[in-house]
Image (cartoon, rainbow, N blue to C red; front, side, top):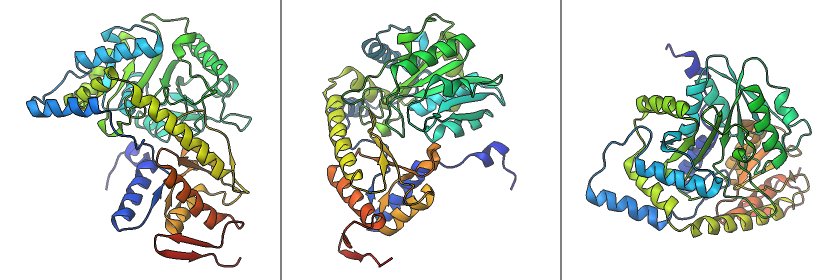
Amino acid sequence: MSLSLIGRSIKASPTLRINEKAAIMRQKGDPVVHLGGGEPKARTPIEAATAAAALLDAGEVRYTPAEGTPEMKAAIIRYTEEFYGRRVAPENVMASSGAKQAIMVALQAILNPQEEVVFPAPYWVSYPEMVKLCQGVPVPAPPEDGTFQPRIEDIEQRVGSYTKAVIVNSPNNPSGAVYSEQFIADVVEFCEKRGLWLIMDDIYHRLVFRGNTWRSAWDYAKRVDENSKIIIINGVSKAYAMTGFRIGWAIGNRKLIEVMSNIQSHQTSGPSVLLQKAAIAALKGPQTSVEALRMTLENNRDYMLQELRGFDGVHVEEPGGTFYCFADFSNYDPDSTRLAERLLDRVMVATVPGVEFGREGYLRLSYCGSIKDIKQGIERMKWLLDPNAPNELFIGERKLVRQPA
């Protein structure tokens, strides 16, 4: 079969693949604990559900403009003014079918074949594949000191004549790190000086915990006119627990947004009017659900850290935001894929191997479920990996006994 070089080079999303395998196991009746998920379990804001239901009742579910409805753009403009302190024009805004599509379309609008995109590591699993889909070259930039906090030197030494853009995701998936204000200021100055595009993936910006401060790239930008190469990406998926609604957006200079809208018009037309109505209601409605989710996640994070630190061989840094811990399990198995498969097959705990995020030996563990999920999941992991754990484990009605070494 003759398939394209690009098609053959793209891997399936590991997070979606694990979700699928865990779902199949659950359908068979297996008591799987899912610590690999990337979506909050909180309920969708009632205002969003009501707005979508009202439009369904009216029966007026039609096409929308490729860049989003005027009402959707107005809600994004209002949100941007409130949380970024900047007023943008409708021509600077494009709504998409999720923040992922907004990033993808931005890359298609700016990249030529073989141009490079640099991003700190660990990184979201889709960044390298999205760049490759544009015939570009992904260039991970792991911090030299081995932490999750990049410095501008980590970026600078990987930028060359083919570099076109830098992607920054803070708070970061998978590490939960909130990048320092110094790094954000430095990367903005560096990109402006070198004429590079800077894509800020801010999807977790409201899920930041005590003692941490998120800052917008715009806070440090010297160039704020229509020649600015800063692209802001955001959406309703994470903070509003609306992952299935698939509404995100991009904000950039007018020419960029015009080109992005043209591309999107041939890909998916405009985002669903039904889902835009729901997103508008969430953005304009009471924001209490966001703070409630943030507080729940902070409590869950603290509990997961406490449980993980009960392992003798696990190293974990405290996440400053998101709903992920990125823990070093290399003392138990340096091959994170093998370890994740073993955990799922032996004790029915779903995790995501760190190698997919550019850091081998680690596992990404999500605490966006319940305390019960975290307790059961970590208990099962300890039984399998930690020789100091109790010798017996019950999974449902099954009793497992560890065999002598």
